Image (cartoon, rainbow, N blue to C red):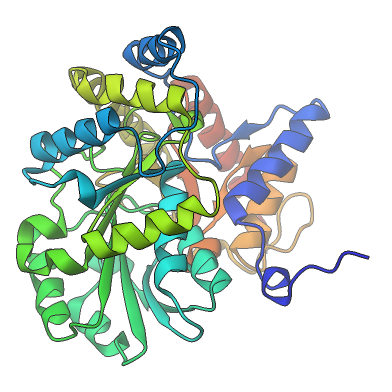
Length: 401
């Protein structure tokens, strides 16, 4: 009889996936569910990407691809770093993966031994600590307080570093809060890292193009080029290019690490779908105007959602500076009862009651290491967002002591 490994049995299903799955179940039952649980852009993939994939088919490029990625895509990625980030990188510093998540998987599998520590500022994307635990790593959370703009403080990172620290994870623009790091933040963190030469940095920059109010993303590598041999940048096609289903992520880092990650991938999935790679080349080479149009739409929707949430008594909501999530706080509502009689003991109970009673799917903030909050994606239509906020308002109005 099958028995799962002990390590696997301790890993929960990511809350984002669990809430989305429950939303689909209710929809299948005929319930009018609005799901704001996943980071799924509601834009079509670029036409250039579709044409690029078709060109791969017509050219007969349907065989096994190189494990690190096709040269044409690696060159396009190097061009992206030059154009968008002002960084010159060589092709042997790059690899292509099945989404950004596999890049994280590859890096942790290539580097973590039992008991190695991974510093993860919270709130964090749910997969960082889960993947670290898969390889015996120990996640170490550093709280990013709302009053600090959900940005990690350098002194808190310094305090968290031990001789067993292997990685510091930075994800900015941040999922789930939309926080970004300013130059001063990055400079302070770089100073801490110079004191701890054994610590690598995983900089997940997949939301780099989705910044608001005239802000621009800045990479740690721009601020601290002397740390280049310790910085791994994670990025991909899913968010800015609305290519989630194409499953194309990429990593840029020191050559020894990239070689180790390629070795991991060579023994798991091997190379990435040639059609998806061709589409990604075309998207990266296209004028970035389409990305800019999406960013402007998200910024407008941010105003719609945050404005509506701030009108709901009992909720607080910081203004996200990037990505496409709102992260309202629920402290004033915890411990009370929903109109349906559910005790709102924590943000998990709140999110479950909101889904079951008001048919709005969100993700509890505790899944991201920082509650009681909710994460709501505003990568949805204006009509859906307005209706979801109205349902949330009615749900909160029905809460009793």
